[in-house]
Length: 323
Length: 282
Image 1 (cartoon, rainbow over the protein chains, first blue to last red):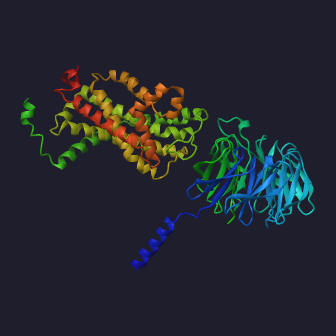
Image 2 (cartoon, helix red, strand yellow; image 1 turned 180 degrees about the horizontal axis):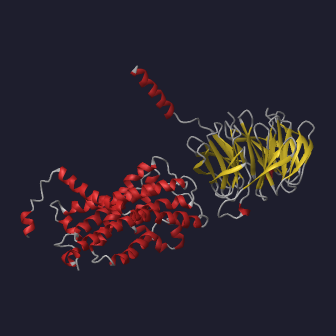
Image 3 (cartoon, rainbow over the protein chains, first blue to last red; image 1 turned 135 degrees about the horizontal axis):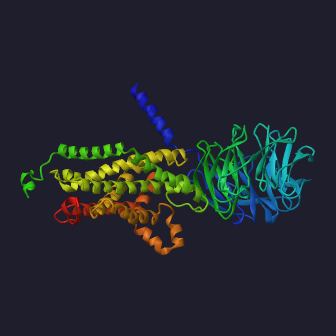
């Protein structure tokens, strides 16, 4: 009996002592023209990959083998092979690609071209451009509805979220939001679409069915001017309960109850916090701090910032391999 | 002279006797502390005013930079918490020394000093008692600070204890050394202004030293030579489960020096206490 007890204690101790599975994050450094590779086991940069000019939007391919990064000033999307951690290929896009999203199967890529007022559609298997969709001025935020039928694009200057039918590639609805919409994110169940407005300082919650703004999340941090609060990146937990919103030069990430749309907490991170990604186990959230050139790590359950890691110059986007 | 004749030789005391003495002194200090509720409240109010009012106002002014032992950006409140803990100990150290001046004026000190146990041991017990009281105050402060979102890692509450003990002893010993040169209770207020405020402000308690260096390199060196800076840093690192060896060495060394100085000063045949005729009943 006691031997069994001892064994189970030993097993528990071994389980506790085994480090959590290590994940790898890729961070695009807009000014440094590099991509920093972060190991989540040691929380350190293990490699810096040279890429094209002005890398911003960054995402893993669905098979987890490649990382695509939009290099705006080179007017293309570069492809990094994660096995050798080098740029091995590139995809065509319109001028100045900024953010992009892909369908669930990883076959079609939709790219927002900031300088061209278009969204480019790329066939990822053939690696060719298969179409362009005209949208508002300065397109940026991109999101695909969970059923893959509706593509959202936000245009920074037109201040709209465009609803695009992915089958016909036609705009089926436009929703006016506050100034400079930067980013769009669907709830996992597709019931709500959140759009952040950088200058407006709000996040609009939109009903995707009726295309109506049903709520607006505003922020207020004691001691900070309202203009300093500029929401950009949005991250939502899989259970749809909690959302994290990067507030740019406010140097804070807002923790929002996704059901009630109420802000519960502000977490202090580095300067000009921009985009974010969860680790696949959702234990941590990594956010990029552009001006302070680092990435802050948030413990999701504890809602606490636990570490900050130096990366390259002006970190912008961040991605992690799907598990 | 006659006292030494009837006093047993100063050797051969049992451990139990030493304990009885320690117990007596600590208990007296504890009772005194418990009976002075205002003192406890005022000891807490002081750092809390700094925390809630001063820190709230300076939140945005200080700028951000990650310095050890912190691993990420912190709010100003979090930064000054260890400084305020040390401030509690600084005030407490001075206050318990103040009570020695009072004891001397009231004549209670004679009772203490006629004890056959070594004087150094008596003074050390007195220091320990003062430090124990300051620990109570610091942990009460930490509890309130926790509700203010100043939450170091749980292990930090334990690892900070030895640092607090050492810092408390150093500041208590310093207070004792200073109190030996004070003839009257009234004079102590002046010393408080000349010791507490310069020590507190010229340290890393309120602003990181890199920030001080940017403003004034001279002040930076003053801060470096201030033992209070090292007490603050020792506490700061210990609160996050780390050891700042440099600060540990400085605080340890200063504790020894101040302690020896105080024992010397409280020796009636040689020390500074001599200047205060008849035990201070002037």
